[in-house]
Image 1 (spheres, one colour):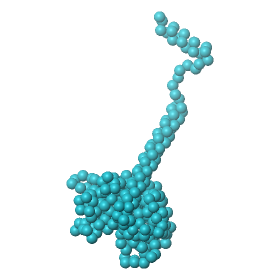
Image 2 (cartoon, one colour):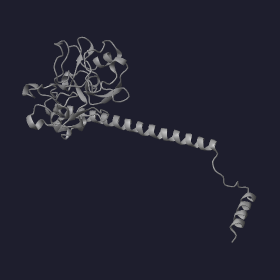
Image 3 (cartoon, helix red, strand yellow):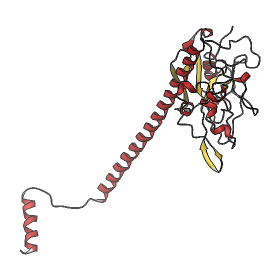
Image 4 (cartoon, one colour):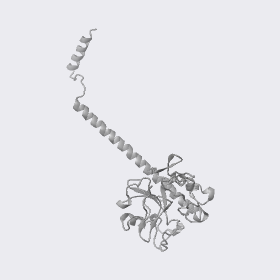
Length: 286
């Protein structure tokens, strides 16, 4: 069959049926489509990033829920006594006189404390630290927020630090700076307002050191910096077993991240909305 004749017949039929003959995109149409594709791609990327952040926040919330459940179970098994919160054990290592729910000193050096999960869950080894381990299936993941990307170089490789969470120093801990007029909670029955007193929270990677979160009740000041991993705030667990969220309002509470360097502590101003909110949920006058 004659090819030219066949093409002519096809073109004629197309026109007679009211359909426009085939043609390419104009430059204007191509640019418009490109813009649409770019917008859709950006929306998809934003959605995925938002979903990732949301997922990490939910994991963090779940971690605090597991920690507070373990904290309550420990008290139930120990005649209402709260798990010891001794904080830093020092270079001499843990001792029976300084038991703690979690131990180890975090910094940005190659010190093994930064990656030692035994300090979190291995109470069976000495009974002096990691005392919540039996209630957490000895799983250290509950002590680390997935949004905390801080790492240290050990044995030539970078490794994530193992802990993001700290405990209210007045819960099973000891007086800060001799402030004996405030309650150090030692038993569940000591906590007069369980829903209003916090137990655990995430602490900033450039503030966290030991597992003892310091609030200066006497001077009405925060010593350590709370976490800002989720939209400028953090999850906190409370003595009644619930978990809540606080987004910090003051610029002083959320300074720029100090990469590989610890912040100067004890410098946060007093009488700010953030300080007053956390102070009211830390301890109380005797």
